[in-house]
Image (cartoon, rainbow, N blue to C red; front, top):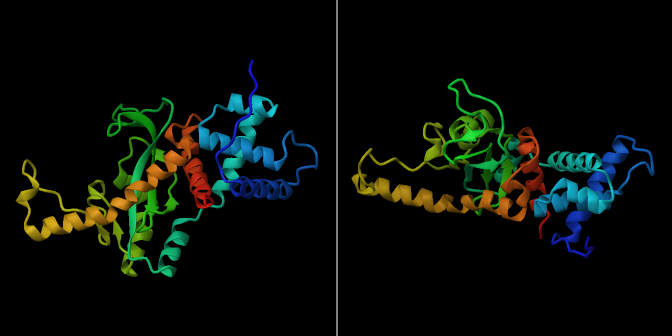
Length: 269
């Protein structure tokens, strides 16, 4: 076995931020002093290594000198305290109004996971996305006009279409925001979303884009160009916090994991 020193490429204030949250959580649950195998700072390093490097929990536990079971417990605890800091949709929309944003951008992504059991009524795998040809969970994102991530929904099985997930988690609040002058831009996966959700117009089946009139083509180009920055939201989170590229924990945790990554992303400066 070879021992070597590595550097965690995360700003120190991010580690300290998570360590403070963990320390506050320990005080809240009245953890006896000296009863933990790791202090808050070392636990924060373990959690951030998992998020940043997609490291296996067995390796993280071994490096920290703790058991694998304790490693999993510390990781889930770190995910929980971070996810608690994520804003809900109404809070995110209130922020948009305060900052005078002209619109928000709605998009969905598949967070890949291990193969799962579970069958839909039609016999297909519940967590398998036909669109992406992969197992995982559907998560909805809301971003600012410049692409800054603002809000993340809870997870739905990968077989859930974006429009269905949006109806469950986002559309009621977005209708109210649109009525107050804050419209939402989205792609064609949200056709049928309703008033206030602005989408490109579909071209007639079997015809080219040129079949649309000039005004409609111009409107489509404007919507696509304006919402293009929103496409970076999921990519930014997945590239910075690589654990989102493939989650090996329970898929029911994907929503909390993504919200935790959203909170961490806000500390990255």
